[in-house]
Length: 153
Ligand code: SF4
Image 1 (cartoon, rainbow, N blue to C red):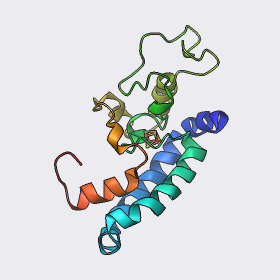
Image 2: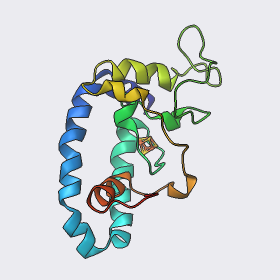
Image 3: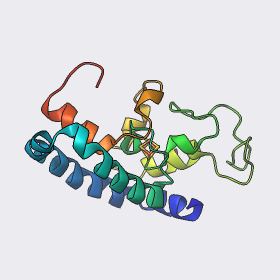
């Protein structure tokens, strides 16, 4: 998983392109999700999302995906769950102070973002992670938010 995670960041631009094609499809499927019921669609879609994103990004299913703002490096792999940049304990070789054998996810995020067309989104301030959303599908959340925006969703 770790090797795959690093590989994905190296090809962040390609994954950004895939995501930018995929997102509108999820949004266009809103009528389908609505007719099935978002609640009912949640479980199968979350299983599919977990399977694919765990494999590629070492995803922890936080339910509030920000990969497109973090150079395709999942911030939830940070032992401190930092979502707005590194903690200040990055080792001189760019590795994590908690897990010295691992590259800091934010060093990777910066490298990935430099390849992406919208890489400057890494400067956006992210909200603290909402643990109530853990395990839920970010894909469905994006579709619901785009089609039926409600505060707090
Ligand atoms: S940000 Fe959250 S949903 Fe996205 S890959 Fe990381 S754990 Fe998974």
